[in-house]
Amino acid sequence: MDVLRTARESGLSTALTAAVRHLDFTTPCSDKGFCVLPGRMAPEIRGWLMAGRAVPGERVTVRPGPRHELAEREGLEVLQVVPREGFDEGFDEGLDAAGPGPGPDSRERLALAGTLYAALRAGLAEALLERAVAHVAGRRSGERPLIERQLVRAKIADCVAAVRACELLLTTSGADPYAAYELHRRLDAADAALTNLFGGAGYLADHPVRSLYVAAYVGSLWVAPPQDPGQEWS
Image (cartoon, rainbow, N blue to C red; front, top):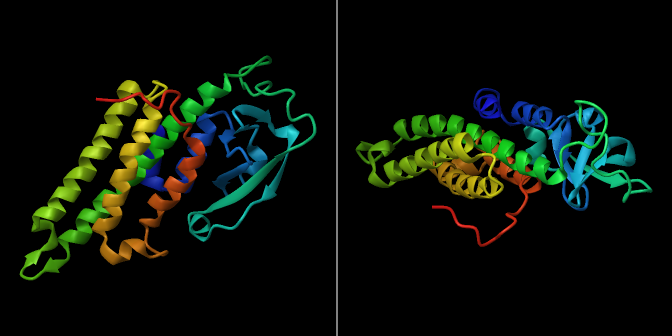
């Protein structure tokens, strides 16, 4: 919930920094080593979660990745982590700040990463929902404010329900290995509805709602697929 509040009050970059700190300065990246971090944070990272394992920072070379204009507008940078020789040695070691010995299992770290990032996205959605409601309240369709239209009210209700459901799941089932995937599935739907509430402005690069798109992009690196794709939630 600390990450959720940070995202709601301070935005994507600051909340992403908080999430990385909660992971003891380890961060997920793709199997090919791509990751997204707040600008100039890379030197602080102690370990990289990639290819299903945790790689200590001293065993990789970090290079600039492909530019992503919207991520840069959010104060983020794309990096590529390239393992050095001995890539298959020393995984999951030396990453625990509490002392020597093996750190938390990389699967546990990935599960925690997915939950933390869901909290981040829920905080962003909550903040932008307030903006969206103000936006539709100030616009008119014919003689009536947009917010009085049944379809608009339904979209707002769907967004509120999705965000509140995520908050409930975070506080009751966040440690469940299946929770992160379900959380992000619901947040994808909420983000799409939120973007639509802003109308055409929601698809402009300089509109604050871009943070939802960037957050979903970064989330694709943070969320591990469910161990059992057939798992269903009620």
